[in-house]
Amino acid sequence: MAKTIKKPLSVDRRSLLKATGVGVLAVAGSGLLSRTAQATPETAAKKLSELTGGAAVKQGKVNVKLPEIAENGRTVPMTVSVDSPMSSGNYVKTIHVVAEGNPNPDVVSFNLSPGTGKAEVATRIRLGKTQNVVARAVMSDGSVYEGKRQVKVTIGGCGG
Image (cartoon, rainbow, N blue to C red):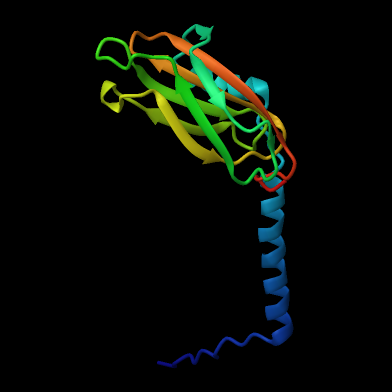
């Protein structure tokens, strides 16, 4: 039997540079395409409706505290409080927050219980541009309340 001898694979410098360049362009191009999608007030409302089970929304009880102007959208302080006694029979189960102009409307969801003691949550969020931030609170009886606040963003935090 004759043995076949395999020659070692050789790659010249020019071929390697071409392949690397094509790879870099593909990665850079995919990053540009992913930023084109933006949430809208409609997509944010749809997301909130999904999160709250399509329940009828009432205004009031929910206070969204954000700065009127955010100098830097990368870190915007936010506090959401809900007027609730937080007793075993009447408490806030969940607080959902969405942003109407970010690439993705989801911001955060908080699960609470009567043991929480106070229906108030605080965090820092990212905002890509001037937009409304909407919070909905789902109460223990299934009712849903909404609060909203507009923030003017001078430097976007979501790649803007």
